[in-house]
Length: 256
Image (cartoon, rainbow, N blue to C red; front, side, top):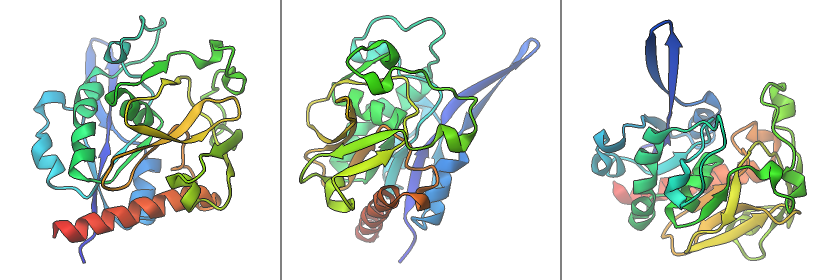
């Protein structure tokens, strides 16, 4: 049996030197590693080309799609949100690349895994909206501190809070208990869950941390935290990658 091909979404990075700006499309290695090493799949990095991306050829060529995290946030006009706060980073090209194809991915039965920004993209694609600055939302005490992105990686990705799993959900079925520990590296979060999405887990302060797509034919899961960081150290993270692997292998076998 051939190895599954997993599309991994890239983000835009513009670097300016003097009067010149060079554009890069990048994916952090931490997203590629579990696809190659745990799933045994072929990673295919997808640049944010917006309408210049041949989505039909892409979706006909892959056995799973990983929507990665990133340094940017979704432009709020995609969810009828208010103006962005000063200095909020955006990636319009990624928005225009990813958001239009999410429902098509699910309808085709292609396994889909969204992480952090990818989690938020899936929610917005299904009509949900977002808190733009969680640290000012009084109802979410666990998320009332800003993230120090200059902290050492092991501290940045350390477990921060409990995750309460929804009884009978996908995560509850693959986890080793109803309460798990997860990291927390995000400044935005779900305000309203999109139609057709099912809560899979919440933080103790009530913030939605995971959901699945209710009518998906295959694995379609999104999480706010970062299970790509040292997954071998966390049984839940490994279980998620294994579930994604199984779904992708099944899809690949059926695709031939």
